[in-house]
Amino acid sequence: MKRVLITGAAGFLGSHLCDKFMAEGYRVVGMDNLITGDLKNIEHLFEEEHFEFYHHDVTKFVHVPGQVDYILHFASPASPIDYLKIPIQTLKVGSLGTHNLLGLAKEKGARILIASTSEVYGDPLVHPQSEEYYGNVNTIGPRGVYDEAKRFQESITMAYHRFHGLETRIARIFNTYGPRMRLNDGRVIPAFIGQALRGEDLTVFGDGQQTRSFCYVDDQVNGLYKLLLSDYAYPVNIGNPDEITILDFAEEIIKLTGTQQKVIFKELPKDDPLQRQPNIDKAREILGWEPKVSRSEGMRKTFEYFKGLSKEELFKSEH
Ligand code: NAD
Ligand code: UDP
Image 1 (spheres, rainbow, N blue to C red):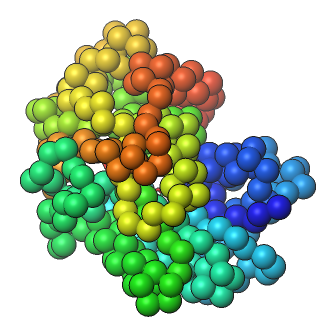
Image 2 (image 1 turned 90 degrees about the vertical axis):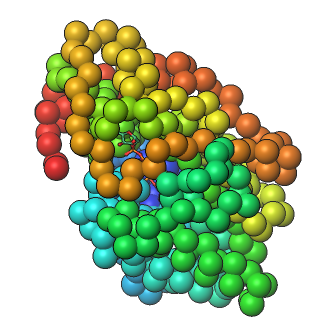
């Protein structure tokens, strides 16, 4: 049996990756320091013979005894609210954390896939974004802590590939959503659904004309799985090209949830990208992958999940 280490295992994407690799017959080692994650996302795996969990901060030396065939490095705060609150940890997990995991991969002879992001394109001047675009990031802006950590992460990963011959994979992940997102993580989908469920108005930032393209988590995880098993070492965009303005999206959520509330407008956060849509030609060609779940179907499943939360969870405010 192959053994895979997944960092950020108690988070949104990491926990779905644990499920995927367990279902595919791997031995899974999850690692997380729980700074933005929650053990309840993986507690259903604790009884499984082939699942282990390490409570560990990956910016500190990472030691995993025994065989490791694959590493998926997903530890990092991912929502703007989180990385603005913990900027130094965000920089450290993308840089020092990645360095530690590359070192572990070298030691074990493992292949490593790192979770990069559409944020490496910053506020893009090219639309849609293809992997050849170098990006437009404000290094010293508030979002720079995340974007630059991820850009450094890509650079050091390519350096290990070129200098040490390490097998590396780089996924540029575009906005992904689904069950297990944290209600209060500030990202637009839990924000809008939470507001609808609590009977609050939906807060659209700016004039709502900025765009995003949302990928359902099952599609994302399948794309990541295919990328890991491919032989392609350069970055690949994984996302859903179905683009929508945030204002239209708010209207869709009002219809989906049946809320009587309306949209209200708030200030646009600094350096909030105006448009974002992946060009996924590479993923189609190299991985034979494209998203299958429509926004209406994915949002229905996501709404079901959030409706299942307790009143206490719904009204708990962390921020
Ligand atoms: P998340 O916050 O739900 O999960 C991140 C997990 O990493 C959490 O469980 C957190 O506790 C853990 N973590 C953070 N710092 C750590 C450290 N130093 N040591 C050990 N664990 C640590 O976020 P997510 O949405 O699941 O994102 C996972 C990864 O995917 C991140 O690297 C993120 O940058 C990337 N990504 C996500 C999206 C998205 O739309 N969800 C888009 C682009 C990239
Ligand atoms: N957004 C919004 N209202 C909210 C939360 C977010 O209008 O309550 C906007 C945000 O300004 C951005 C988009 O929704 O333009 C997506 O934000 P998110 O934080 O989900 O992801 P990112 O900006 O990292 O793509």
